Amino acid sequence: AITELKERGIPVYGSALKDAKEYRSVKAEGPFALIVGNEGAGIDPEILQMTDQNLYVPMYGQAESLNVAVAAAVLVYHLRG
Picture 1 (cartoon, rainbow, N blue to C red):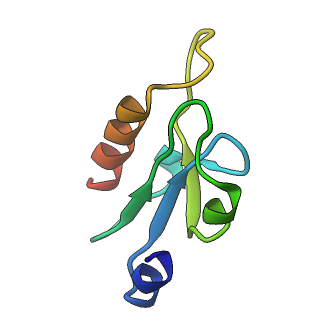
Picture 2: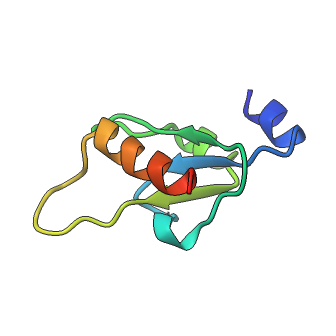
């Protein structure tokens, strides 16, 4: 599915804490795909290697991670412009 999206010119973003850019540094134009994983296990590293860019949402305070629904909402809201 990721390969098909990329073949159609649709950028694929993943959510990750390592080797990722802060989400505000990326501007999506048009359709995109977003892959998010749960707070504990996250996304399989093999899948993260297939994305065009992995993004993270910076956190303040001492929280370990954001709830996946919250992180997805922030990312989609930003990427939709």
